[in-house]
Image (cartoon, rainbow, N blue to C red; front, side, top):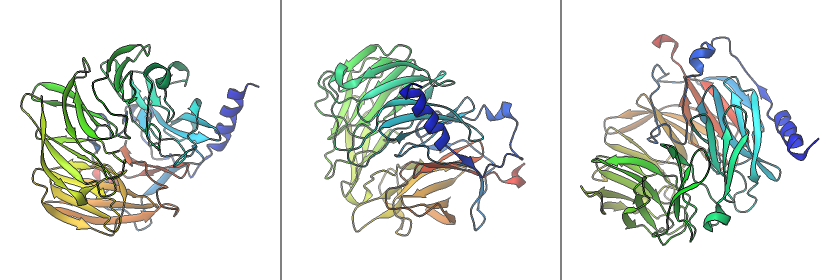
Length: 424
């Protein structure tokens, strides 16, 4: 038996699935259409199109459909496409990419490279699905393309060898964007600060070396401002936008954090972009010029920092979790002015997603909360507990897809039915 086969067998045995209840699930044909193909969803707004969901949960929480145990250690979330759920996790000295079916049965598991065993051990990124394949960058710089149905490795690029990739204390953590046949990635190296690779072959399409900074932990977004498409992300010391077709720099704004935890996916709306970093680095709203050749700071608030939680823009209101020491709070502010609408100090640091005017929040120690969005703030309507664990155990953001709530952390994956039976 080969080492790879042995690892797959062990991982398959560990991914024990229990508490499964599929009696009332939709037909397989419709379930295969459920899709959340990447970090923060199809358009990276982190807003699910789901409807017909519960507006309040039972005291014990929504019904558990199934749980997969020992899916690997780390902080990867889930993506969903083609009737499969994709995630990643470290198993011993190997990081594995896994695919489970919609009833929680493991379909395949394939190594993506060596495990990250330095600061905060475990996996980082969530697999990105695109056109029958999934893409993942390993914390140590191995970017691989896997067949979605089988886990077969189509190609692998060593970002250190090709681009002299450089990263900070927590490794590479970028959730890749794959768009129009291109894989966009920030190796942060002298031979490629940001690069575009061919999605079919891994061949280099373009490299940007004009940015004089290394990779952060930010996952980018692609926006259209006016008629200009732009790839927007953060380096260690700036917010940047590139032309996705050429890699040319469109604009760059300095953003030097007090602590190098710039992991927030930029939030775009109404010609503006919100960026932030953790531990009292604060958050800034940037206005993009009409010609997309520059951007300028509109407002900055030190107390609107953001470490791992993500921020969401709903109805002109910005929601997020500040993590500054001695001042953790969940906030709702006016997006364009930065005016505080509501602050809450009970939720703590939470990962977020949204659907149907509700916010789903996973606390970093295991508390799960449901919030109703109000005209000038929010209301906590329901809560339940995952197994209580040390701080920063639960850093993967929740996912709402197919009437289900997916929660990943502590090496496990929980899946809950959040459909409202009365909604038809």
